[in-house]
Image (cartoon, rainbow, N blue to C red; front, side, top):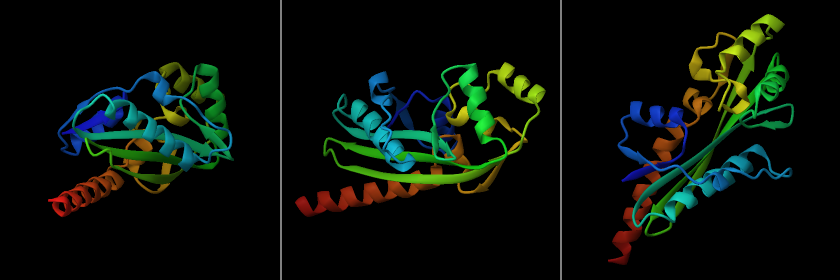
Length: 197
């Protein structure tokens, strides 16, 4: 059984629409924190995905646990979820008119073997400049809440454009990358179990 270690409704929606059967168990908040200033975006999302998967995996006797974390990066700054409206404004002002990247780290943890598989996906986007009134309208909508970089690609914003990479990665779970990782992990585990018999 696949278990999604996440509180994100967007990740649940993506997996559901892709046809996966899974349960959801949210990791403890302590598994989702801790940014080291020396980490690159890929290192950060991999570590946080691992922490989330580990937190849930250690509570399970069996199953496949999927941890995922997503951040945006622009001009050398890592942008997670905004803490409040002013933080969201600062993020959006930084992103406007710049190409930026969205990184997602995946960690797939099998119980009881405790084998892990991981990967990172990256997508590139641009964001058009907004007038002050347009920016205020978006901030008033509160659609920025809980979203890395203070925007949701899935919200149909006509001022955010995908340049390269996966749309589902920008939303929070790179489905194409996950499908390959899921297949690889199941194949490798089956081969290992066959060799042990």
